[in-house]
Amino acid sequence: MSQETDKPHLTRMHDLDLLSQMIRIRRFEDKCAELYTQGKIRGFLHLYDGEEAIAVGIIPVLERRDRIVSTYREHGHALARGMPMGVALAEMYGKREGCSRGRGGSMHLFDRATNFFGGNAIVGGGLPLAIGLALADRMRGDKAVTACFFGDGAVAEGEFHESANLAALWRLPVLFVCENNLYAMGTALALSESETDLQHKAACYRIESEAVDGMDVVAVEAAARRAVHAVRETGKPYFLECHTYRLRAHSMFDAQLYRDKAEVEAWRHRDPIVRFQGWLEANHMIHPEELARIETAVVAEIDEAVTFAESGSWEAVEDLTRFVYAEPAT
Image 1 (cartoon, one colour):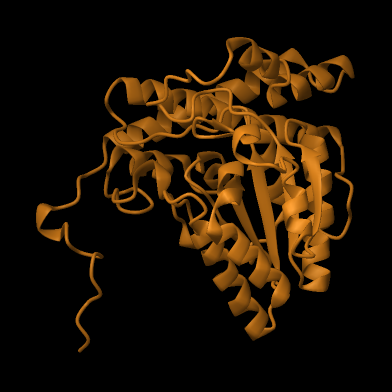
Image 2 (tube, rainbow, N blue to C red; image 1 turned 120 degrees about the horizontal axis):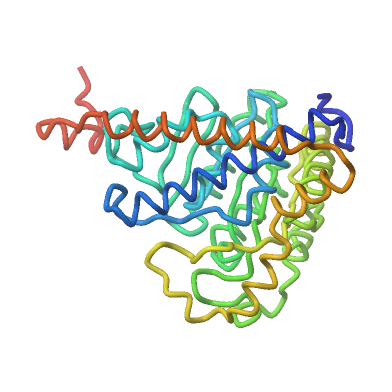
């Protein structure tokens, strides 16, 4: 697909691809939750259920030379960018075959081959990194775009305001993607921010901005095309606020006592997969056997990833301090 057009090419094959990618992320997350309860994935685990339309709508619009900086809820971003599923799962298992040799876990997926600069356990921690990457591109005269994903909670951090200010001041090619799921851990956005339309915060720094329904993959892709085209042509930052909702808890440790069950159920009716699949079915653009093929292929890929992760090796004890400090200069 051309990177220069604003509208998605809604061919039937493209529609099936969008649905397939969202289902792939959802089923992977379902498996991760299962493996976590079995004690095979340890530490923190932040799942992406409900937000798949954002990763699938934005990341494929980017070019290979573009960079992606993510947040701790990054499994969907990594898969959409092309990280092999087995490598991602091996990292969560803590295996040496993982993308960070098992040292980073769920919140620190990284893939040099796809310019995926990974997640960050620090809220808003990826924002300064994105500014640095974009500054390097500007100094070299490259036309690459750095897309930085973060949640609504990060907008309250100093890193956001510092990064937005420098991006505007220095005219840096950054696409800021705020996945606004209404809750920073257990704090509702309305209880922590006097201005809940987060795109207005970017506008304060004279950054072009817009908000989009993050539960509508077609709307997200259309907005992403506008945004990426603008950043690439002007070299200036762009802020995209995606209104979304996490259908699972903040993390697997979260009892969700702060969310009303009726609210969660209401958002389930806006599930991006259910909505898009329903639209395809209503318009006779997908057949039951095609959906069955998608599900079968995804299950097979997940089974292969589990086998890869479980058969992986542990990092040698004598190498545990490797990568902690720089190697001595010779």
